[in-house]
Each structure stands twice: as C-alpha cells, then as structure tokens.
Length: 125
Image (cartoon, rainbow, N blue to C red):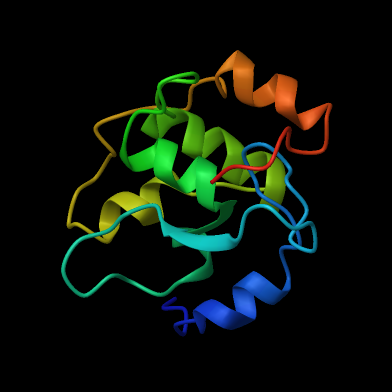
C-alpha cells in the first residue's frame, strides 16, 4: 500500500517540541525545523520520513556542536520512535531503493537527554 505524501507544515503542527531535546516550539530562543530522515534530491514528504527538531538539534544532526558533538543517524531513528510511537527503517530504506538502512537505532547522546530534563536546555544562537 502506498501512502500519500504529507505536507511538511501539517506534520510540524502536530509536533510541538523537538524530538531530540524536547525544546518546546512556543519557547523563544530556537525555532522548529523539519528534518528529512532520508534526504537527497527530491526529498520524500512522508510522515515516516519526518522528524521535528529545534534549530540546535537540527544543526547537530548535520554538523558538530563544539559543546555537544553530533547526533548520529541511529539516534535520529530512536528519537523518531520515541516521539511518534513508531519508526519504519524498512520504509525509509525503500525511499532509496534499499532493503535496509546502513545504520541501526542507537541511543540519543547523553547531553541531549540531559537537556530533556531541562525542557530543552538553554537558548541557542
């Protein structure tokens, strides 16, 4: 069964916090961004391929934060499952015509988990 694409703004309206650090969308200091778990040309707009995250965590997914490091791809899958109740690695792999993703779920890094207890931690530039 093929799913219909979902508009990114519809997904974001249903996710009022960062899936990684739990920064609330209505709290000043960061903004919410949509991460495509499987990116690339013609990014696929399916809800199983989306993750709502704050600007700091989105940056850490794609780059390194000096004080925090990076968020591994496997941790993105874990956050997806925690936030949405499910993660579908086989569907994500199929978006790139693969049977499996080249990575597996892994724990969210400790510093980001620590920020969850502080409602996302401190504002970020």
